[in-house]
Image (cartoon, rainbow, N blue to C red; front, top):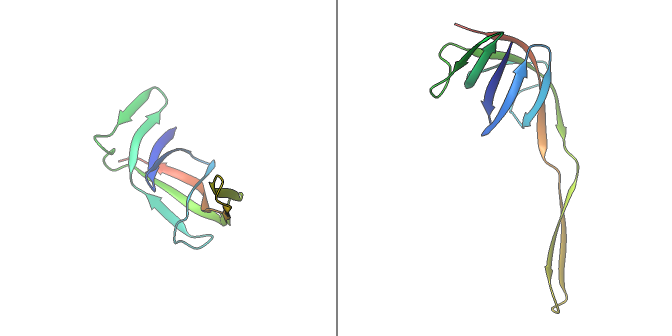
Length: 104
């Protein structure tokens, strides 16, 4: 059984026992959250597609960690003008572990 969940404008595949990373959420480590934007629900041979979401379906997940991703370097450069700027960026992420998928 798996579900396609929308969180932070992106879609993720959620399976019980598996984990995935989303954009930073304002929850503490160990806290349980409910993701109710379930777009698709697959249980064996049956598939339920939401219009736009599946009614009554909820994915319960636990916040495992808050972390930062790999550093990305951003360069600005103007040729022949001696203008060069380097800036680094590290995105904040939240790792979620899926506990269960509840259907109505």
